Image: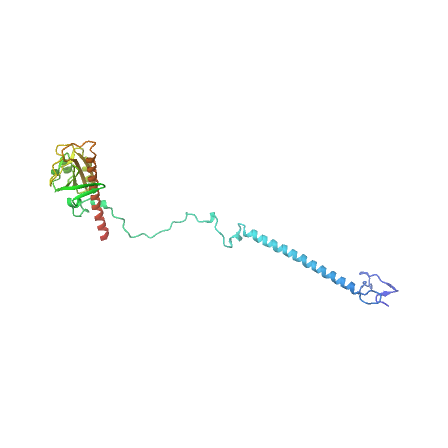
Length: 296
């Protein structure tokens, strides 16, 4: 007699019907009660296979979810949002600071401004260095470029008008010239006399230069083997000034010939000595400026 049977026929299981029974296959072959091992193995394999499919499916979903999260993270790192600024980044052109910010400030230095050499030769109050014709024109000869000039006589007077000719004496007196130093040089039959007039102020020297004309001539200085020149012949003269000094040149031939526009040697000699006079007056200012700076 088997369990669950009445009237020799198995009852149908009805979940809503009282006392009904669910059909149960206990794994036996139904003939002699011996378990059907093949059937049980197949059922177990089927259940394991379903579990593996579920695990594989779940893993695929997890992989998709992780991949999506990584993709979102990559997109966020390349975006312009706040997340992109959390890690180290290279500054874009717009992020580089411009020069519009406040300029750096520096502490003022205590070094005084450089001294102007011209200030020391522009007035008698500052021009205190010893002054003489030998000091302005030292040595026995003068070299300017390729030209070498032999030095002749020198002269120094407080009566400026006495060493000038034409309209120059009046110009020197009108602006209170205090001293006139002269020196002569020669080269290849050409002689030149340089006259340096000294005034108390730069403005006096400047006015004297402006009022001098073609007839304002410093007297040629001869002696010591140098014959008289530029007494009756036509000579070439120049006028200029620097600081409180006005300087004049007169150049001509030692044989008494007239200077013409083609007399390049006379023009060159006069220009060289005028340039040297300017340099010597400027050097005088530079020397006094250097001494003053060293004393501070």
